Length: 333
Image (cartoon, rainbow, N blue to C red):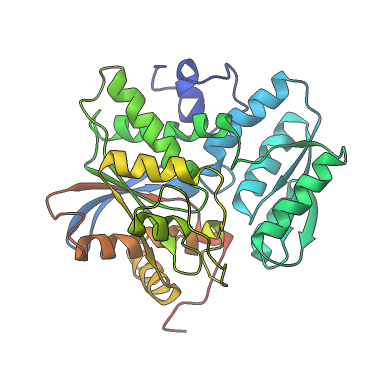
């Protein structure tokens, strides 16, 4: 691994499939130690990345590959964070970027897309309608389809979440990792990253993985509870955790396999529980968007169910800044 003077995704270039990820000067994201629901927690604050979410890890690698291939225009669909990340790194690389976004997406995220110079297409209807619209545009020759949900290069980048945390924790592996769960790109990247450390003899084990979904869209939680190997068919309801509202996660079977092999679980929480957890977390100094608040809310449920024990060291991913999707507090002015 590179000297400590090199941080972020670039620090792990020798472990990545792309020799030169595009960089916006990523740093190691902060960790904050605390307690939650009676458990020792290490919060990893991914909102500290350049576009404000963990998506930058995967995008840096993906866009590095696009540059290698000479791609000059891309199309994507996103509820906000993935599109903003792609737009930022494409702007850095000089690649034109068109992003199809649900018309219900956070206005702050849409403004961020415009700020990076992306061509933004607002699509009425559910999240899946934006996917259909982007794929149609790509098929029509308007650019390479660069979806983070499908790209193995994106997963290679999110593996750096695990390697960074391992170093920050004194080259040790936590007992459990808790992440918000929509398409599963962070969970799968973390699983691959910790497995790589184990296989290289740098860690004796991998942690248990826990994913938290919204009850408004829980195809993976439903499948996990029923013992299914594929995501369940669900009806997408309106929910605050917009980044996790993926009704048909294309890597869902892989997510279910990774969680089960790790000895972890998938749970879900409703919006009221999510908002209460977000507000409580903010009053401890950590301000996150609703999708990230799935993690503290789900952690409470996992502890109550006995799946995470008071003796466990828990690594919890706070995947996006609260400045991306500001909401009024549940109580107070």
